Amino acid sequence: MMNKLLTIALVFLVFSCKTPEARRPVTVKTGSFIDASVERNKKLYAKEKVAIENLMNQEKKDYLASESGFWYYYNNKIDIDSLKTPDFGDIINYNYNVKSLNGIMIYSSEAITTQTYTMDKQELFTGLREGLKLMKSGEIVTFLFPSQKAYGYYGDENKIGRNVPLICEVTVNSITPNQTD
Image 1 (cartoon, helix red, strand yellow):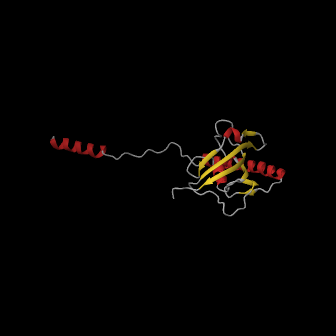
Image 2 (cartoon, helix red, strand yellow):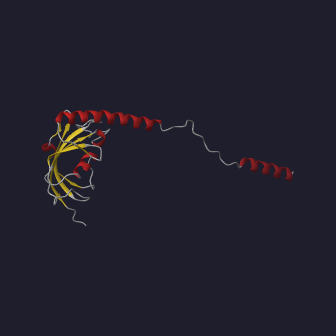
Image 3 (cartoon, rainbow, N blue to C red):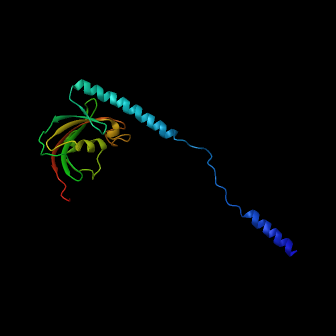
């Protein structure tokens, strides 16, 4: 009887000690959402680029293409070599306004007021941050930003809607070098 009980216990122990089997996903997801998003963004950028190029052709200005994916021209260019563009941590005092591509004022420089920005240490939309890096004290530059370099998909949650390309006219009043070095 004891052998029979021991055998049953041993059989029960052997069959009940299986390792848990991994659960398999019900469906396998691919990168289809990401692929669709990339395709949608490419089409949006192409559409905005055409609108920006049409505007540049109408204005007949000497626009430059930035390495960062926006266009700009100098309203007032300073050709003094001793003046430098800002470096990391420099404090920039500037004014700017924001317009839609059809020239309608969204935010005037009076409404925005004079801004102070510590280069690459504070939040600022990508295009403006990259644009300020190109400027010297006293320069006035007009930038054409596709929506991905402006406020992108979310807009500014106020007057700028989602996926809106912008025109910004920026005046750098002064650049104060970083004093912490």
